[in-house]
Length: 283
Image: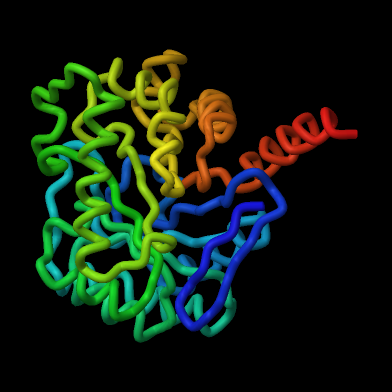
């Protein structure tokens, strides 16, 4: 049974084969309109509670779009987008909240409002104060692999062996986290599908995910409606649900610990079906 220890001696568990992290973007420009929480805190909070009702284990809130081509936003802008939403959700629900940020000031403010998890697309590389803050706060930390910045990362990415290179670079960031005082059982790795990767690199990472899982850290997969799913299926972003579910099922079979998704209810159904079929072999 997947489990994750949070700060304050709290632990979350799921009876399903993987945790479901729901995406809620406090941004006006994230690539999938359905993940945007709306332009009011009340509407975004209602969206979050709806995702919890559908079966989300964690709500992941981001105030800075990291889609290919996006520009970073200022610290003050990110704070203004994220903190009122964290506060509003925490007043109405105990659901674990993950903060998708590269900035320690944003994390610190979010933790003060009751956030539980750091999801850092820079793997603690962009803000020198981030690793120490995460260690002191004893929060789980998601380390995502990428090369370059969102504005330029898809220009000319090159890999000779994408699975091995991504694995080794993630393990390097995990060692950095350990040296900063972050406990090993609070480190989660994310191969960063679509972040400085070619189409063939993304395919290789999905197919070879077990090689990263075997390193001994929980692995999050974020495949939901991404461009590689569109290339596989020939579908626009609004029509990529079926392809996403298929890719996520394969990821869980290869050991994924958590799925970061836009479509919670459908992902939960997929995991239930997978669980029942897996369990049938033990009856």
